[in-house]
Length: 68
Image (cartoon, rainbow, N blue to C red; front, side, top):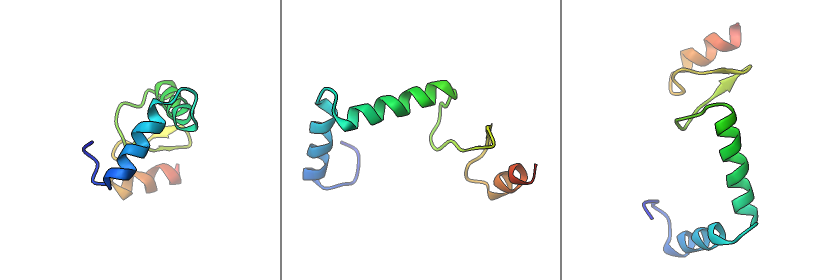
């Protein structure tokens, strides 16, 4: 409800979210399981070569991990 999107779009999302076995629910479940597997607690989280970028908003972090 807090998203700044059109009402109709918001209602469509809610409807899909509440359907059992919908594509949306399957994608959410997949993402949730992936986040648990990698112990992701914040979004955005970025991994480079299996290593988590400490600050995903700091370009220097990306450069450092890509050089290693």
